[in-house]
Image 1 (tube, rainbow, N blue to C red):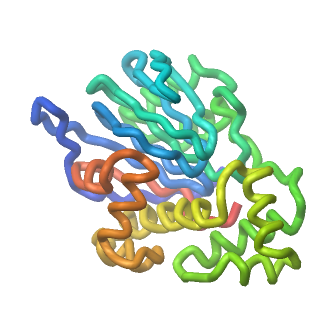
Image 2: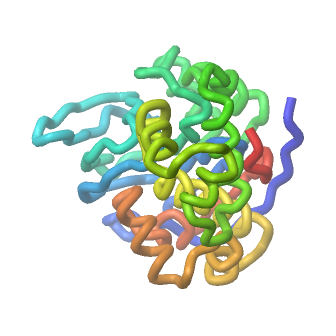
Length: 258
């Protein structure tokens, strides 16, 4: 069982009725979970698979003009969508493609139960069980060894501007072939995977007490505008929505090594 340490990062997510709603962020290897009240999230393209669940009721998701009301859903990488949490509590977990989440949560009912437990009080046991209920027990190693090494190199150098061609050369592939492997096996691009890794580092830096400017620089973002643009394009909300309120961050593991 992993070691967990905690640090509160005091901000406050404000809902449409101007009531302060405490929110939670859990950072672990290959996944970050946000729990908070969510309204309308504008159209965005997810860069890694994302699990989402309504803690109180169903929420709305729109993909290619089709609107659905769902309680739990795993969106595949590169999907363009918009979301309406209807102002209620929503759990959103971006997931590293290396963990290979299933098409749908393994146990949706249990996921909702465990999320409500975590929203009330963080429990490492509940967190581990939640990841199992989603279907994130073990990393998927049934992939080309060179691709796994390239993913490791991207995560390891996410704070640097290392060219994709340089990473491809290190694993013995052309850039075009490595790009094909990322798309075929992960459903995302090298660039998107690097940005995801930077978000993991950003969250860990904030939990470690850095302000958002310093945490962004340490994670490899050029400036605050770069963070805001990338975050909005990926999640449909600004960084201040997640980090700008009374958010408690629980760090299960600060490393990115899967």
